[in-house]
Length: 363
Image 1 (cartoon, rainbow, N blue to C red):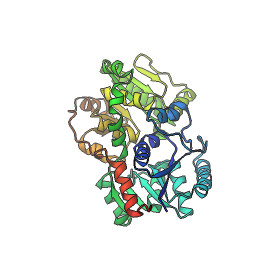
Image 2 (image 1 turned 180 degrees about the horizontal axis):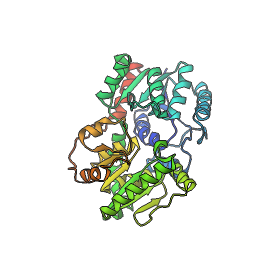
Image 3 (image 1 turned 45 degrees about the horizontal axis):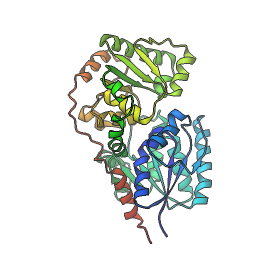
Image 4 (image 1 turned 120 degrees about the vertical axis):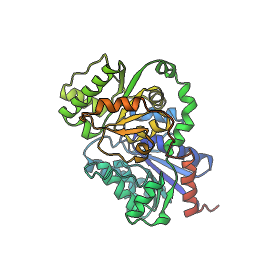
């Protein structure tokens, strides 16, 4: 009996980070099926990525959308379970730390289907983050844990995970960036961004956008920083963030803070590549910035990507820190010669090799 892999995705970062794996399954003639929870469900946050990355459309869409964590997770478990019973895969692969990851892993676990967790072992050590709960639970019910770096492997061993379950593979985001680097330079807006001087901002986490005073303070200090550096800010606003800005009635300085609609993957890489500096609370963008040799300010008190801090590509800076503006200046002046710590672009193959070694294909 051949291996059959069910790939469970639900958000923009999962589509991007699973794309190299989907392509390698096709290249290596490994049977797979894609299940999409539609946790991200707008064209800008979802459908455009399948087109740009030249991926097959998912066979299944659960249309879960947004909602309370328990409600979302329950819908995902129920929907994925029915599909797994029908498709009978030998493996379920999930990536990251979303409700889709937790729901997909729990559904597989209850059906005693092997689980592989991409990006295993990341820890913020902040249990107030729903993502932290999702990644911990998923790690401890998975059969193979694909750690991006040795640091995450050591974290997992420290939590009692058996070492034979852990494989250091690198991160598939490196594969995706490497695969699409040439396409980015051909994007019609690449030259436009290349000759502009700008910062880039992304923020969507509850800790930054769910409180009016916090969000207003964050946007104000970034605008002030832009004015001081005579450098405007592109702000592709996440739908959730835009909803909060409108709900709170926050006034934005449009001359320096240019709010734009969410953009596709290739345009986002073009924006990142040509930015003077990136402000973000996104884990994936921290990684992409590091890979693209662009410095970033992480708008959080902690990060699951300490490697980026260690090589000097990122700095953790709370927006209310009185040193915020001087820290920005430090990062702008940073020499862009750090070593990418997240892998060599062969992560998808490493993951599939691990699965086949665990459970070889039989013709």
